[in-house]
Structure formats: C-alpha cells, structure tokens
Amino acid sequence: MRVVAAMSGGVDSSVAAFLMKREGREVIGVTIKTWPKEECGGGDDKMCCSLDSIQYARSAAEDMGIPYYVVDLSKEFAEKIKKYFVEEYARGRTPSPCVYCNSKIKFGCLLKKAREMGAQRIATGHYARIIKRGGKCFLAEAVNGQGDQSYFLYDIPKEELMYLDFPLGELTKKEVVEIARGENFMSAEKKPSQDICFASGAGGYKKYLEKTAPDIFVPGDIVNAAGKKIAEHKGIAGYTVGQRHGLGIGSHEALYVTKIDAKNNAVTVSGRENAMKSRLRVKGFNWLIMDELNRPRSFGTRIRYNSKKAEARVVPKGKDEAIIEFSEPQFAPAPGQAAVFYEDEIVAGGAWIEEALE
Image (cartoon, rainbow, N blue to C red; front, top):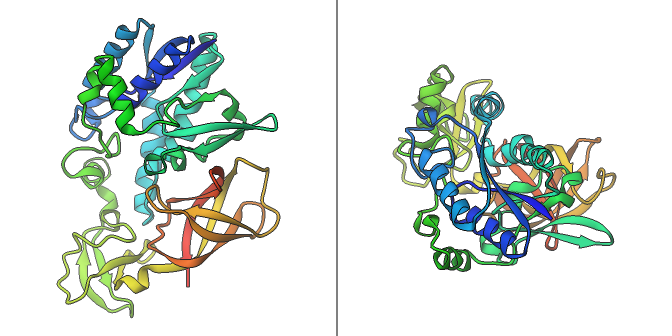
C-alpha cells in the first residue's frame, strides 16, 4: 500500500516515515513548506520551514531510499494562518495556530497530494492513535500520555480519520530518538522546538506581530479587578489570559492577566483566585464521535495542550454553541484556545473557547 509521509525535518516525522517503510509500505516523503524563510521570525533553523529542516527531511528520505517532494503552500499559509493569527491577537484572544493549521491546511493538503500520487493513506509524526471499533475509526490519545498530541488534531474532519496513520502512537519520545540514532538520521540530535513555526526565535510571537502588524499595538489601560487603572500597556496583543510575567507592575502579590477587553482596549490583572473559572462559553464544534450534541453530556476536558483532563458537563445552547460546567475551577481558560473533549482515551470532539463566565 502506498502512503504519503509528512516530513518536517524533525526526528518524529522521520521515524514515522521509517516505521511505515519497515512495515512494507511504499512510502513517499512530502514536506509542506508553510512559510518563506525570510519571513519566519528571523529564519531559525529549528523551524519546519527553514532550509535546514528541509535538508534534514531530504537526508532522511535518501537514507530510507524513498522519493521525496517539497510542496510550497506558503501563499495559502500566509493568507489563512497569518490572517487568523493576527486577527485573534487583535481581538484580545490567544490563537491556537497548530490546531487551526492542521484542520485548515496541512491534513487536507496531504490527502489531496496523496491521491494525486496514487496513495491511499497519509502518515505523520504526531503522538496520537487511530483506533478502529465497530467498523469506524476514532482518534485516540497516545499510549504515553505525557507526550500526547491528540489535542492538536481534534478539528480534523472525522471523515478523514480512516485515511490517517500515526506510527508513533505507542512509542515514547526516548524510543523514537533511539530508533533515529540507530538509523543514523541527522534529526536524531536535533533539538526540538516548542515555538510557533513562523514566530520562533528571540521575541517569539510578540516580535513577529510587532514586525508584521504594528498597527494592532495601541496603548491602553491595565486595570485591577475593581476596574481601577493601575498601569498602562503598549497593546493588548502583547498579553494573554493567565500571563504572570512581563506585566511591568510592582505588587506584593502575584498578579495574572484575568481578562482582555478588546472593545475598551483594557487588560485586567488580579490574583490567582480571580483567574480560576468554572464555566465557559464555547462555539464552533467539531465532533468526531457524533454529528452534534443534543443533550447535556459529561467529558474529560482539556482547555490547553498541556493541561490535565478535567471532568466537565457540556450543555448545548443551540447547534453550534454550549456552556461548559467544570466540576472544579480551572486556571485561566483563554478565549481563542480549544476545549477538547475526551471519553476515556477517545477524542470526542472540541470547540473554541469564547469567554469565561462568572
């Protein structure tokens, strides 16, 4: 069976392609070039769009003896992901570009390219699993929960799950690196990057926004929980809900950003207790185990990639909106981030956080 393997140049995607080849699959390596290097936050070589990363991927493909291609989607990526990223920060929200890119660009492109090449499936280096039950395919957590990446994949259309392979779903990162070293892949010693692919390097996302969208940085007030001005900010785009460091405010207690009000260009800071929220409004669902939620239902819920699942009741308010009621208050749920729902190890679906409710 022919399979297209997404290869970013990192150790995970290289080993995923290798495991497919070892299974006897006819593997074709493909790198999706998502951003021109000169616009990628200074051209950090750890980024997936850097020339070095493409060389790492090409080298691994040559080592495996598989064909390799680069697909340039930098224009589409700029039009969709850059626009989304900037607009979300301008609205006082915290975007999740990896989730958005996976569902809006990467997986759809890979499937299209696979079909053009006569391939039946695609494989990636994500730490997640596809489980078959009753003739249906479900997205599931990786066996090693600590490195699980299923959160980033919840927004993929459920119709596409049957065409996906995640070869690393039952492996640890350590095991993957050991395989890469055994095959002498250049990526085995490559340091992983947790940065946004187009906003890495010194200054991160804020530097990227200042360079590409300086107009969204408009000075305004920083206020306390009572609404009293206590300082000034240089633009709400430089803040995210839950942020503690870099506020530039002297205080005897730890202060956190608890609210960003784009309409009034204000940032609210307060103690940690005011950042704890039990109720959220979410919208824009993508369900993987059903077509829609038509009654209240409980799920294990993550409100950010590295958070633990928390018990929550999801109460539908129309077809595409709901209220999440947590059993225990959660720290700093940020509008713009995804709330992802789980039934045990299975990803049930998810939605975008709109606001925390009092």
